[in-house]
Amino acid sequence: GDLVTSLEGDVRDLDALSRAVAGAAPEVVFHLAAQALVRPSYADPVATYAANVMGTVHLLEAVRRARGVRAVVCVTSDKVYEPRLGPSGYREGEPMGGHDPYSSSKGCAELVTSAYRRSFFPPERLAEHGVAVATARAGNVIGGGDWATDRLVPDLLAAFAAKDTARIRAPDSIRPWQHVLDPLAGYLALAQRLHAGEARAADAWNFGPSDEDARPVCEIAGRLAALWGAGAAWESAAITGPHEAPWLELDASKARARLAWRPRWTLEEALAETVAWRRAFLEGKDMRDACRERLGRSGV
Image (cartoon, rainbow, N blue to C red):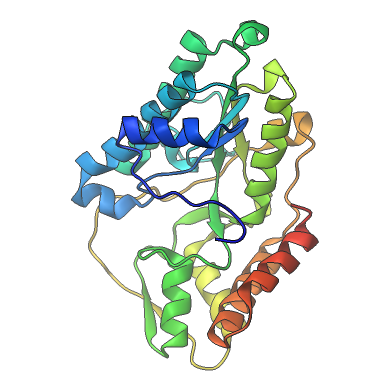
């Protein structure tokens, strides 16, 4: 395109990925490629582990083969932690776990990255090898441009636009909701520290919303319906399905204290902007301009 060079490939192909990284000759690498949904991971666990675990191995191997990389941020998930219930958010040092294939694959990706960092990119020898590697864990991100299926907010907005009644399978589940630009700002702040040679930044980081923005699914559905207005309807549905964590919340105090990062978007603002973006898209407006305007307001 006229903004970026886009090369599509498969992170499960080590040689192709290595060629792509070498050809781009980046100084900073963000790894976000993944099979990113819980329920499909039950249907095809092999593909999920191949993409999320071996894809991470391949990315780090590609970095090892390349020259000039100085910073790597591997993005995983808030679901990497061994499940527990409250009373406070997960902190970075808690055990990796995961009940379902998706969650455990992301926990595995964290362990893979940690092993590569210790074995090949140790922070205490950063001056020798020159590559600082970190991981980042965000909450349930929302915002314009999310077209994934089997995700609450895109499913709700699609139903509202079609004047269908959305069916919610886990209305009481609690998730840490945040506008996508907040964790992205965190990833950029982290990458800047890594690129500058700050060895202590080569670690695991949570980028979660404020505690009060960890809210139940039913509340999010109700607030989105109110923002959408006429034609928006949803109902709780007893949908039989595989296990999903009933509670997720991140403690992002480390990023706040050491990276001077803080969420800029309240939950109310994030929901309103997500609805506004979808309506603007449906009205045929220039979404590049819409995205630029939001980026400017968020300071990304």
